[in-house]
Length: 339
Image 1 (tube, rainbow, N blue to C red):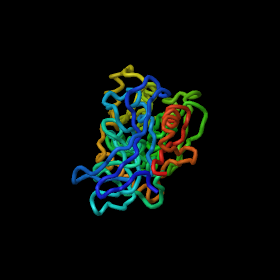
Image 2 (image 1 turned 45 degrees about the horizontal axis):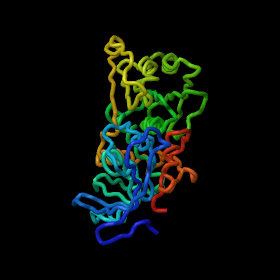
Image 3 (image 1 turned 90 degrees about the horizontal axis):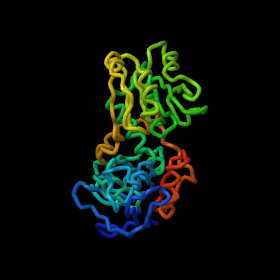
């Protein structure tokens, strides 16, 4: 049973709404509204959402941390569901997708239904569930976009992942190992790698080891061909000192705006730095990136994040879910807005 009534061309959808930014996540005012949705353009599709991931960026945008976030709006960047209106060849298909715009600059996915460009929709592999597909989105899009910009990892290359057990870190580890590269991952405490990989992952505990020295030792003095820095400033020095000659470093976030930049080391090492902002990606652009990853998920070389039963929320528990995603939870959290 769906939570919305279908007419010939529109639905009355149940949507999470955030009216204004809050000073802290516990104070975010989240309401639920009924809104009429329909395909307004020939290239649109109407999706009945079966699952929508809850990203840290969804919650942070309610705190005014994304300057281009609009209010009021429906949050949510990732989704999976069934097409119920739009291009005839898509109707009835199980699809998933992501976006940098959805839920930030326009109404997003934390609702029973979504209108989005048909070109943004990616057909779901049959071997993963809709909830799992909804959880792929932002982490894998971000990880893949970094590698697309820097050059995909190759067999024989070493990829250093800074922030190994974060969701983007796990996604980057999966992609790099799928491509045949060797992966070294850095964590902040004594722990094992928490995710899937297509090969062995060497874990370095930065609380007890000099990261750059350890990477040099593990690579016979060469260093890492690619450093994927998912944390930013806290690992900037270690990551830069770990780079091989002609090495590439990818940045997706930071805790501070500035770092001590050694221009001599930069040009003498012939290094290249790449910045990735997943919020700049349109829904169709994110769909293009996800389609590149579908063969990996279909073959089992890539695996979606597991969705635990207690990590699934109805829209009515949105405030609790937003607190959890910015708190201690390491699980991939999802809404199931249609029950």
